[in-house]
Every structure is written in C-alpha cells, then in structure tokens.
Image (cartoon, rainbow, N blue to C red; front, side, top):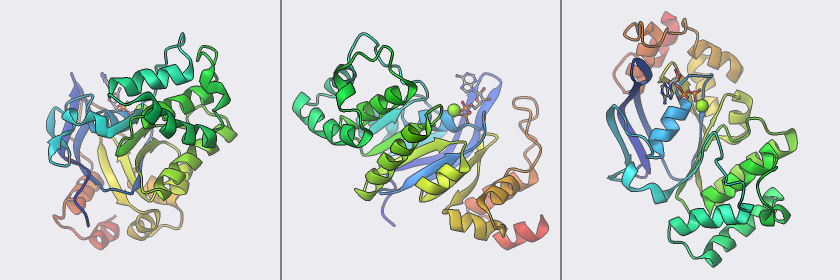
Length: 275
Ligand code: ADP
Ligand code: MG
C-alpha cells in the first residue's frame, strides 16, 4: 500500500476533565472514502478537527505525509458542523473570500467550483446572498468553499445532517463523484446505512476510541453478523462509559479491539469466541 496521506498515532484529546479521545491510531490513504461512524459524543468531531489541524492533540501526533498537519492546512478542505457563512456576502463571494486566503486566483477557483456547483444544482444561487439560504444550500456552499482551493483530502462533519432527502442524496452523489475522480474523503455520520452507501471503509468511533476499522464486508466477517447494524451494535455493546469519571475503566472488548488493531494479539477469532 502507498504511504498514508494522513496518519494519527497514539492520539488522545482531553478538554479539562473530559476525555474526548482516549487512543487513536489511524491511517488514511489516497483514493479512499472513509466513514467515521458513531453516536453523539463518540468523538467524531474532535477527531475531524484534529485531522484538519485546527486543534492540537493532548497526546500523540497527526501528520500529513511527514509534516504536522497544522502546517499543511491548505492540503485539506473542511466542511465543519456549522457552515459559518457570511450572510452579507453571496455564496460565490463566500467561496472566493476563502480561496483568496489560500492565494488561489479567482478564475482557478471558479473553474473548480462551477463544475461541482452544476452537480449540486447550486449554480443559480451562487450570486445570491447566503442570508435566508436553506440548510441544504448552506451545506452545498460550504462544500464548494472546501473544494475551491483544490485540497488533497476533504473532511466532512455530518454533511447530510438536517438536509432534506434530495439534498442529502446530492451531497452523497458528490462524494461518490469525488471518489470516482480519485479524491480522498473522510466523512463523519451517525447513519450507518449512509456510511455503507458512500464509504469504502468504515471506522467505528465509540467512547473516544476506534472500535473497528474495515470495509462493510470486513466488519461483517469480523463480527460474524449478517447486517452492519448488528455488527455495529455488537462492537459498541459495552455499557457507555461515564466520561471523565471512570475513563480508566476501559471495557474488555475495547481493549481487545485496540490490541487487535495494533497487531498485538489476540486474534479476531479469539475475540469473537470469547465474547
Ligand atoms: P461527536 O462529534 O461524535 O458527537 P465530539 O467530538 O463532538 O463527538 O465530542 C466528544 C466528547 O468531547 C463529548 O463528550 C463532548 O462533550 C466533548 N467535547 C468536544 N468538544 C469539546 C470542547 N471544546 N470542550 C469540552 N468538551 C468537548
Ligand atoms: Mg459531531
């Protein structure tokens, strides 16, 4: 396999007494669409913010190639939970403002964006002020803004949350199109079915750590379950940890997974038999 584009090793992040992430080792390779799947409070946004280089880990390192990701932010396109558009600017002005900060010529940004705007059916709206935009239109504008400077990786935090069926579908189509063009996308969601539809690889985040990592088929094989939902429930089935109070009380299965994922015994069949 090629060298990883993004690598996280031994990453932990705490906010005062809250351990948002306890231990994460993860590599992202070029051309993958990777889903970060987990419930509310699992640590998905924290993980994406660390990958985006907008926050430093408490422990461990986050590298883009061989450099700290915080020094390579121009390589990343980010669509955060809250789009943060300037309502007094038009959609295109919002996008242009962002791409100019990266030193991109307006013509170059426009040629990148117009291609995707057509796909998102947003071309007409680009000249409108974003004040009054629907959630779907805001989200699409934020997607174009993230693509305008030509990033190597796109990081999307719950990009379809709160979107109507058609807009959500369009966003998923865009991700699939990017993948078909060889792009790399990291996509957080709490919808397992959506991850199954869009992602080549699913990383299950639970209680601040990675419980499993593989293609949908691999997750089924690993757990011996028939549906991904059953596999997910199985992998996250220990009692939810009370963050900050008993964070040292790591569950049995979590420690198994960690040892398995880091290549330190036991084998997966031992894990499953034992459970
Ligand atoms: P998710 O995106 O999966 O819902 P988050 O990464 O937002 O999860 O949150 C993980 C945990 O970290 C939660 O317990 C959350 O309350 C806590 N957390 C996240 N960001 C902060 C912050 N800036 N300050 C304090 N706690 C935070
Ligand atoms: Mg979140």
